[in-house]
Each structure stands twice: as structure tokens, then as C-alpha cells.
Amino acid sequence: MSRSAVISDFTAAAEIPDLLQRALREIDKPSSASAILKQLKGVVRIRPEDAEAALQDEVREGRLWEFPLMRGQKQYWHQSPVEYARACLAVRLQGSPETRSVILKAIEGKTFSGLTKAVREQLLDEMIESQKAFEVPPLVGERKPKSPRIAGYRPDPSVWLRDAFAKLSKTLNLSESEILKYAQTYIASELSDAAAYHQPSPTEHRAEQPLTGDATSQDERLLEAMRTINPQVDEGDMVLIASLRKELDVHMPGSDFDSAVLDSVRRRRFAIHRYDRPNMISEEERARMIRDDDGNFYNTISLWRN
Image 1 (tube, helix red, strand yellow):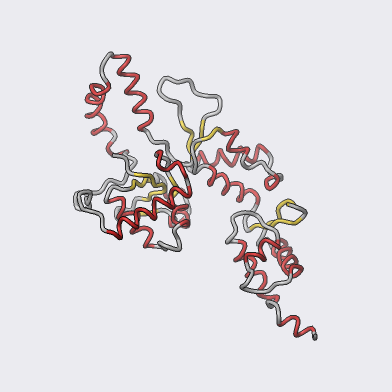
Image 2 (spheres, one colour):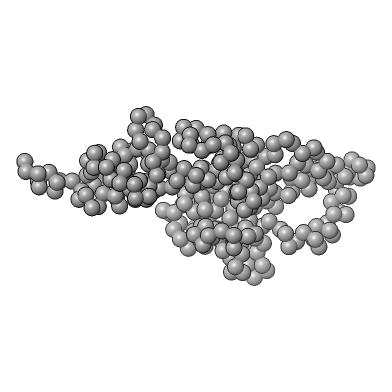
């Protein structure tokens, strides 16, 4: 067999870097050349040695980064180790609040062996300072722990309110219902602007309308995807809208996703939570959120609580 015949049976060398780059972006972690080629199986044919050479060229050109060996194979990724660690932190913070030590331990494995503890600490501090992560404060009257819990969303204030009302009830020798009655006026006047939920306007309100079959299916699909991302969603946990959008991209692409979520919110099936500083993040990050007609951005979603 001639050399030209062999070459024609495989992907042209000029196309290989772009194909490998695209395949790598479909994988959720640094991967070896063989793992990347598996992503392309049945689509194109690339020799393993050609793939490895192309990946090394991409590293030299600064378009890919090389990570530590895993099972004796070089690992590649389209983000630097620092950027990858930052992305891993963001995913970790989607779950229930955890202490700093637990969160940082999640990014201290072999993949992150080039990052010192100081660098990992700095990444987490930067997320807190930019309000992409939040320290969960202790309940009223509790001593501040040495290592506060941290989450990637603003903690729901109702937890602290319920605890505070229970303590006030005991201190003032009043029933909790009496405490709530006194607090009602204050909450309505002082906290209405800081409500965490997107409340439907009178013209939007559809809570009394019966659900159609399509709406029921839509809500079930949203809830199923939320449970896939965070099994604690039925307990009140939130989910990043960006993660939910990615999970449902095949079934609800682009504006279909936005319309489905906003429709479910208007019917009080789900609640979306406003992101307070959209100007501090990139346009790409804002695009993964949901924007309402008033220009507000929402970055997390949870079940509606009556």
C-alpha cells in the first residue's frame, strides 16, 4: 500500500488540532490523547501518534495545557491548572455548604499537584470577594466557628429568621405566632425589596390557572434535571441556572429554556434567585443566567416554597 493511500484513510493533519480541541471541550476533565480519541470514535480516524504530536504542538502554542501523568499518560486540557481549579471550585460550591478544608481538599489531588495550598486558598478567597461564593454565617447568638461553611449561592435567610423567631419566643415568653405577627409589618416594609424570589406581577400571576399537559411535562423535565444536578433539591437546595441550562440543552435550547423556566416561575412551581452584581462578571457568564423583562439577572433556581 502506498503512503498516499495510508494518509487518505486518516484525517488530514491540518484538521487534527481543531478536531481534538472540539472533542476535549465535550469532556469534563483533563484527559489523555487516547480518551480524547474515544470521543471522536466513529466520526473521524486519527492515529494515536498523530494525536499526541498535535496535542503537544497545541501546548507549545499556548492553546492547551499539559497536566500531570495519570496511569502513565499525559493529560491535556483547554484551561490552565488555575482556571481548571477555579471551575472545579464553582462546581463543588453548587452543593450543600461545606467548610473551607473540605472544599479545598476536593482540589488537592494529583490533577492539581502543581497548585500550592496558598494558591488554592487564594482562589477560594477571590470567589468570596467577587461574590461567586458566600460564607454561611452562624445562627443568631451562636459563636462564629473557626472554619465557616461556604456555598456558591446566597444562603436562604428564612433559616436564620425561623431560628431567631424561636429564640425571641423563648426570651420574651411569647408564642411564635405572636412573634411572627409583630414581625410581619417589619418584614413587609423593610425586606420586600430584598426578597430572594422573582415574584410575578399582577398581570403575570397565573397561580390559579390549571396546568396543561405541556406545562406539566415541562415542570417535570426541569425538576428531573435539577435532581440530577443536586439530589437535595427537594430539601430546598438551589441549583445553578447555568448548570441546569447545560443539562437541558438538548431538550430546551437557548430561549426555549428561558421561556420554560420563567413560565414555571410565574405559575409558582419554581423560584429563581437574583444575582446582585451582574456588572462584575463577563457577558458570557451573564448569558448563562436568566434575564427578566426588567433587566434583572437570576443565577440559581429552587422549588417554590409557599
